[in-house]
Length: 173
Image: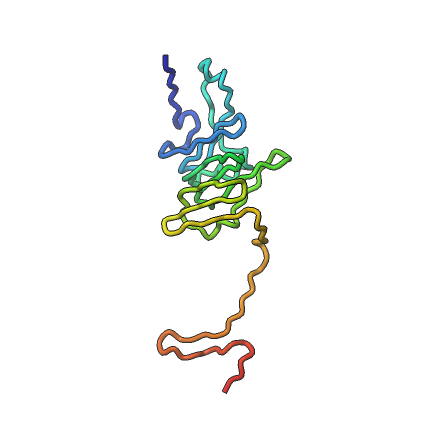
């Protein structure tokens, strides 16, 4: 005997076009084109016919709750990192000891439209977009808040290749 329960907008799911589904603890998370929603899930209650009621996401601090945020991917890897691709960015949520989640996205900010995410091990992640394949190593620590200093050595014009800046310490003739 098969039991099938249909959920829709009346149950709090804002959009049903290509939803992404994931369990986080005892919550059923649904990522949609109009934000992420959650429902407390008790398999016994559901088996006894109790309907789930979906509310805007709170598990991740409401980061994805807005109807302005579109979720295109939501998956949990074997190391309990929750990978999210949304209109607000791509990254993962890491469970912290205090029960909250950290949003790790800075290392991935240059990847446009990530597609497939393959988790090799706890630190090595492979990510593809339409044109490239990236390898992320979580063991390599980098501060993304540090300023990035550059030194311009030469500036030339596009039209005739004339040098208009010879560098900061160049001697001009």
